[in-house]
Image (cartoon, rainbow, N blue to C red; front, side, top):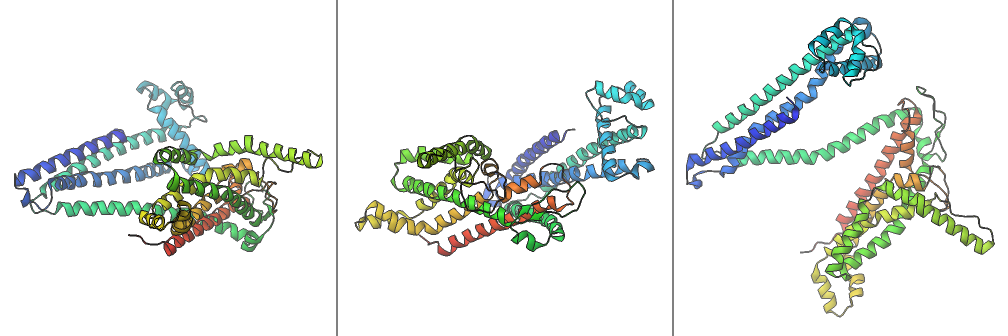
Length: 494
């Protein structure tokens, strides 16, 4: 039975359990609902929980553990000389066994008997059935494939039986516990609370997992390259080594990448903050409701455009435009039409990234400004202040902590951008201040170091994890500082 069908049956059992539990609770007290501690719906939910949750947990556990048990059992039955091979070769052999097993399911009993007697005929036979295998199957592979199919079928049947028995048994157990004074609501709310705690813990556990996965590889890198050379080095020249080599030749200076990241992010914020903040002030304080209902969604559409599209826009439109206009300006001034702005430059990437960040600044600032109580506006206007004076002297000071927090969060978004920088700023790791020349960022080098055939034994590859953990620390500090600013200076309004 397919797992999807089993989940559908489990959902039907849960629905039936809810209805039967509700009906049983109503039947116990008749029309006197006041005799019950909990409403009938809570009793039905209690039965549903016992029918679905234990069975779903066993199903998930079975789906996770069963493949490992079957794989280890099949590989343990390989001949001695095959088990003596490397792990990679054994994995390759098991992959062929899996392909053969899928093909055997499509053969008739006569074809299967013939193929088992002569494995050399199996490859063209499986090819005619639409199953391709990489090499000629060995006799032990056919036997292992047959064992794999048998164990998989037995596991599937056992899973279905166990899940259905647990679901029905749980429903029966819960039905027997229904009574007029039974605290069904308390039990259901405990389950809901546990689900909420689990959901809120997922983000924390995911963050911890990301940090640990990067940290373990970064520690290996720092065992090969001293930390001070990485954090304080001014030259980036990794010099890729051959596959399997642990040669640490090259220079892994972080400073050029960090400078490019901050420089491009700074240019982007110079574009995004004024435009986004002024648009938020206009929509919150001056725009009519009709105009706001149209302009705000249109502005926020920019946030939904994929960053690769912004990268193409920078590469094909903004970069060439700035290059050509710089050539015209230089020609009018000196007679030499040489361009002084490169198509791939800091200003190109920063300008396009700033456009992308406008809706972040605008939307967050608009929500913060509109949260300022209307009584403050009315009081200022009642004292004779104009609308512009009210905005400058009352609204913005009151909303400033939130706006600063929004800007810092937007800055952390700018620091983590990749695709726009790849296409608009180039990949040259340079330490310079000219905004018209190419630079690169930490994220671009993470991508380049992890592109191609990967061997996680050389510092040339492991440096990507050191860059990743550094970028994570920078963005985390920005977000924490933004929250600190908001909480410390936020005014409390009734």
